Length: 429
Ligand code: UQ1
Image (cartoon, rainbow, N blue to C red):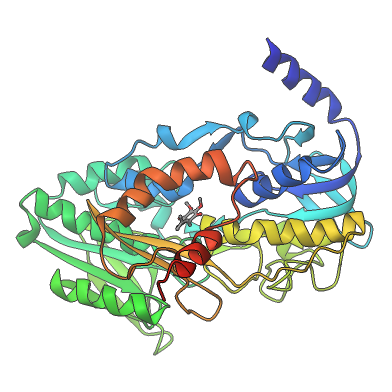
């Protein structure tokens, strides 16, 4: 009863057209920041704009692809997470006019703000690969992707039923969110093939647009060992441009010789999706030349509009786009925005680029990569996290989801830096 009442009140209150703070996006970054600020601001000061009814724990999708979780258990009603005392505007933002402090919604309504947080995420675009959508929709026995709510549900079935042939896993052009995911699902698949006693009948191949397997040297070295040991074929500087479902051919552009194509036969093709900034952002005065929200990477404040901040996948902050990056940056955004809003003078804490990639390498092991803007490891635990460990796997599979739901998006998790300092004080290097 109570919650029905709240929903009605919230719906009615969406008639308000001005807010002290507007947050675009109720994903991980938007909720983490809004939850913190809702505790500091009076009722009805904050509006959160997001159309989606469902909040999805996206870092779990690799595990769904491996049959370790169900897609359903990663999904919860968004209404549970919109912080009390804020207004949920269930629309899409489709235009931002920062000179006028206005956000326009898809129904034409205009919402004005004093302060704006842009946390809109990044858009996936399979259409950049000719034939990909058709193949994913019509040939799910052979063409798969963990990257969307719709397609992830089919991945485990296909991998688990695979009995022989060539399995190709692709990594698209940057930027993408969770750059580790396209290879995590490959390691899990390779392990699954072994468990199903068909590994010797399968070629496993990783075709990446990057020149290296991973951007951070320490973890790249560990991953190269695994790739060698497990007989995975690694091809760099190849970008998937076309899928021919009928002939089961994947066409890649050789990025070192633009215009030159290379064709591979596949029996299973896992597609890492090309991504791009949402068009309304790319076209807005907030965007940089690539269409991402142009913020100062240490403070998360917009470079031209000081009352605007950005967090997460929609920004041009040069770190890997992950939930862990939100964990490492949300308190910095909130602190800097609070200083501006309340005229306070808390010390300016600077974001160091902390991000993390729990690289699951099998059904019970994981390399827990954590690093900063410069690709220097920033490891939490006083052990070498480049080693495959069961502990890291348990953290990824069982601990992170709870931290995300209970702490991060509720505004109570500022990343693991506090533990890092604690362990270092305890005597580790
Ligand atoms: C993290 O805080 C986080 O958000 C809850 C993740 O997203 C799911 C992560 O993957 C990681 C690695 C962290 C960092 C936390 C620890 C304890 C290393």
